[in-house]
Structures are given as C-alpha cells and as structure tokens.
Amino acid sequence: MKSVALIFFSTILLFSCASYKQKGIKIKGQTNLHSINNQDENVITEENFRILPNTQIEYKKDAIGAGYYTLIPGNKTVFIYTLEEKPKNKNLRDAGYKEEILFEWEGNLKEMELKDKELSKVNMLVGMHGFFKKAGVFPVTKGYLKIDLPQKDMMHVYIKIEDPVYMLRKKEIEKEIPLIIK
Image (tube, rainbow, N blue to C red; front, top):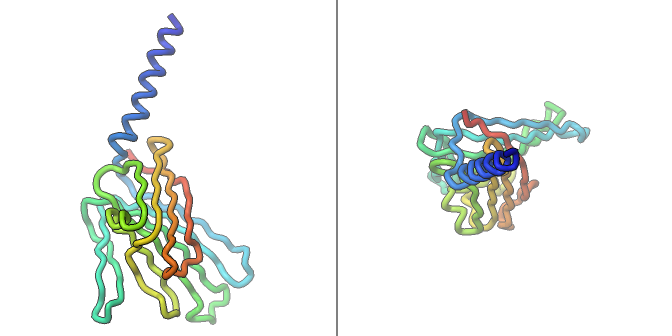
C-alpha cells in the first residue's frame, strides 16, 4: 500500500513540475536583487538585477542618432541587469560608469535559449553610460541568452554579450533569481 501511494505522489509531483516549465511562470511582483562590492580602495561597485512585470521597453533614437530607452506600462515583463561603478572620492565628478543589459518577454516566463539575431525577439539592449565616446544604448545582435526554470519560483539566467563593439566590463552574467509569483 505504501509503495502505491509513493508511486502516486511521485507521478503527481513529476507532472506538476513539468507543467510550469511548459506553461511558463506568471510573474506578479517586482524583484530587485542588490549587491555592493566595496573592496577596491578607489571604487564602489554595485550590481542590480530587476524584474518588472506589466512594463515594456520603448527603444528610440534622438536627433543625432543616439539610442536610448524608456520603460512604459505594458503587457510585457522586463529584466534589467545593472553594473555601476562609483568613485569613493566624491570630488571626481565624471569618473562614474554604468552598464545595463535589458530584455523583455510577453506572457508567462518560459525557458528559452536565443543567440545573435534571435535576441531581437526579446528586444535585448545594452547600455553603457559614462564620460567616453562609445556611451549610449544599443540593440544586441551578437550574444547569447539562456533562461532555465529550476523551480517554480526561481529563474536561472545566463547572458553573454559577444559583440566586440560593446566594451563592457562584464560581458558574461549568470545568476539565480527568486521570482514573486503570488
């Protein structure tokens, strides 16, 4: 009798796990992970991972052709990774640096694997902000994105930016991110 019950519950567990991977996960709340690395004597490095439901990316170019984006209310979910370096010396005005990688998806979050031109399906952008010539926001055309859902409330994201035009300090990102689904 115990073995029949064990087989029954194992089967239910197996199918319930497979079901969220097929249907995807509906994200209901905003996620924000923040970490600070203060070990360098001159620079404070901050990393942020944000997931914003009911938001979408609007990418535009200004009059001189420089790209920028705004976040607007919408039916998509936006993922934003930010790396920011700030000088500890507050008298250094233009010494800060910030880079962003962001993308969006429509509907439930599902496992995905996209490469190069396929990244346009999720509107992947890279932003580099600081006092240098290559600053701006650009669509990513050469890179890799993989999202796994190891648990119903967890997202594993791996991003690699391969385009040599973007002089990012961090071209590879891998992180497990808890999701707010209730």
